[in-house]
Amino acid sequence: MNKLNPSIVANVCIIPARGGSKRIPRKNIKDFLGKPIIAYSIQAAVESELFDEVMVSTEDEEIASIAIKYGASIPFLRSRENADDYATTVEVLIEVLNSYKNLGKEFSLACCIYPTAPLTRASRIKQGWEELSIGQYDTVFPVTRFSYPIWRALQMTDKKVKMIWPDNLTKRSQDLPTAFHDAGQWYWFKVEQMINSNQLWTTNTAGVEIDELEVQDIDNETDWKLAELKYELLQNP
Image (tube, rainbow, N blue to C red; front, side, top):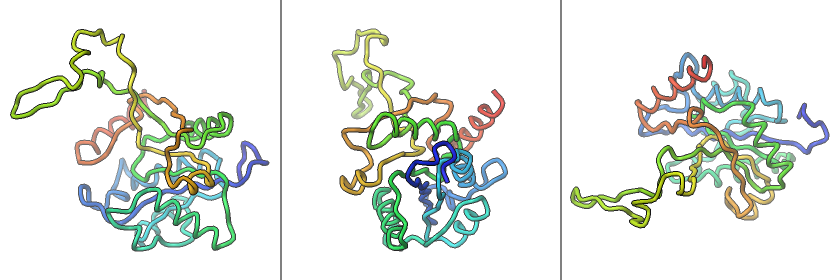
């Protein structure tokens, strides 16, 4: 049960982790500095003390076994229809919430944490929950700044380059708007609004800014090594 505010309606953490992965085989349970990478997301959720249940949505028996070992629950397996390359996060979340409803369990707030987000911290999950609760948003998720002004972006055709927005060529960096991107770690959301809109982002969505050291997209082996380096830097600044 939620230890920060015992009166709050039940919260659930949903970690979507299918078995298939083409770019990095068995990515969701690949060893990351001594533990399966999914263990970091599970443990961050548990350490936040915000959830009545931390569950992993998977169709894979090995992933399910590892998830349980590190403190998650597997109340049911994911359907095959939502375990292929084309299933969206929203489709998976709605399936999970409907499956809970069939078991007589409903939640007002939920947090989707990706299984390959080892830089996720319990303190950031708490920060997102506070923003969602106090700010009356539909969804809250972490964002980070682009390291280079995107307004000076180039496009290239047959090796020739030109600016996408030529008017920004002579503008100073400090005069250009700050741009952010999704950190790709977690999404706090109000269950009813997400189901009704069939999307995680609404016009009432807020971002929690985090440092680029806390963010690493993991799509290949180089990304994996960079994530490990960042994790160690965060542990030993």
